[in-house]
Image (cartoon, rainbow, N blue to C red; front, side, top):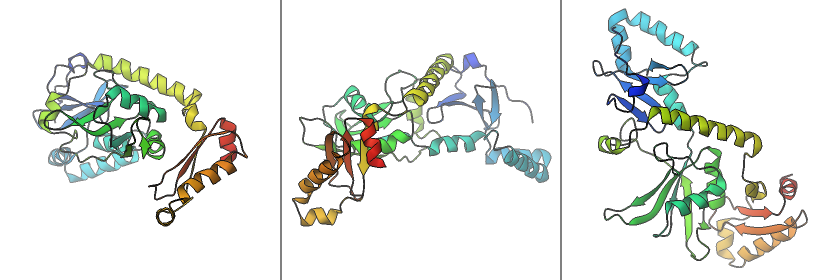
Length: 301
């Protein structure tokens, strides 16, 4: 099998055979002669084949089925050291870092959404624009629809946003509440977008990309060691199974009684700054925020 004419690193930005996959943050090269795909390993500075059926068929025709089975076994044995191709990409995609938000005010901005959702963790910057990766959905006329997609750095921020910001007042002056849930996607192609959408995406300068990724990794390493979670949420405790939806429907005063009872009990452990009953929560959740982290730890124990 002839060696493909791989593009050079400095040509990634202009070479149309190279695509940058946002979801896996990697470059993929498609060989126009046989349609095979290769993923660029920035640490090794080399291209590696992405395992697919076309590659299997080509190897079978060149070496025979037995050789391919041996190759599969070898790949399986070494999978613990370096998962390759689509398998590695799928593993990266399994850990979702995005939330879908609905019920937003129709005059909101990306900055306002970023400020609100950054309470639950650092928001991933767009590698092309360096702005927070937030998408406000619009209708055919370009008007905001009230829903958005927010991408975090870390997967744990997703559940934190669901627990803390779900069914919350986005603005203190607006009685409306927002819904927050884990984002789900139905890929239209391998990149999760139609060909026309993919063509509209700005091509990322690979050198700039590597610098930004290195900067992000340093920031995350520092954050993991020094401050893994916002201090505000170190002081917040989520109590579950405190009530059922049926109980709230039967007794309209239960909501206030619950908040008062929980505050009264928790104040035995320290100063309580707020108590929030998630009245639509099927888990019967109540959030209690203490003034000090030690009080929150004592509550959990």
